[in-house]
Image (cartoon, rainbow, N blue to C red):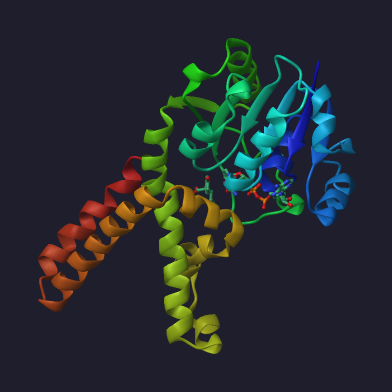
Length: 276
Ligand SMILES: NC(=O)c1ccc[n+]([C@@H]2O[C@H](COP(=O)([O-])OP(=O)(O)OC[C@H]3O[C@@H](n4cnc5c(N)ncnc54)[C@H](O)[C@@H]3O)[C@@H](O)[C@H]2O)c1
Ligand SMILES: O=C(O)C(=O)C[C@]1(C(=O)O)C=C[C@@H](O)C=C1
């Protein structure tokens, strides 16, 4: 049985820990927040709290912290005396800047991965044992990972009952901008628009399922999303433009009383959930 070190004991790292207790002999946890360290121990997510240097003795390293942190931790790891065949898996929501900035001496050790699973909550208390089950794991630029590392990562993802998909990091970032990142911008925009126009009492009275669903993502962690938006800036700006042009279409149809065309436009939108 292998040993594991998880850097970042929040939603993603904590959930991974809960789900792999039977896979690993021992799980070490690294987190720069002392409160999260204590919570992770109390919740039984990890066996021990450790320092980065302690990861020299583990077989698998999971990096589940915001993207710019991942890039700097990879630099830190590259200077350590890690096991030669260690498998490093990062869970960053964008992939291209991570693989591009990964130090050459550990590039073969890295399996750049993005679990298409999550919630709007963060920190160790948000960890859920079955978060990864039956979800997609996108693995990027796998040809740049070593054979041992590729096989180890695949074995772990299969243990988690995940559906593995391979993609180029640049393609992943483009698709993620539209399908994951832009919806978060839209939700934050919606929340701010309503907060700017409506008072607390009316929001509480009139918020039913629709508004709650649409604004759920606006609860998400700002630090994590700052990094995602920064690292996927170009694709995200294109996605925002695409969204703006749909709003413009809707506005024009409404302004000009083109109700049949508006209905057609909505019926096209109805198609989306038939494929999901
Ligand atoms: N939340 C999601 O739905 C989701 C889904 C897929 C991927 N991701 C990605 O996974 C990563 C982690 O997200 P999360 O939701 O678990 O975040 P989180 O805020 O719940 O947890 C992050 C943890 O890492 C710690 N941390 C932050 N920087 C650190 C550093 N430099 N060194 C050590 N510890 C550090 C924090 O204290 C926190 O405990 C991010 O890169 C995110 O883009 C998130
Ligand atoms: O369901 C949610 O709350 C999420 O935000 C999860 C979600 C997404 O679906 O966009 C968010 C970021 C990720 O990198 C992967 C998944």
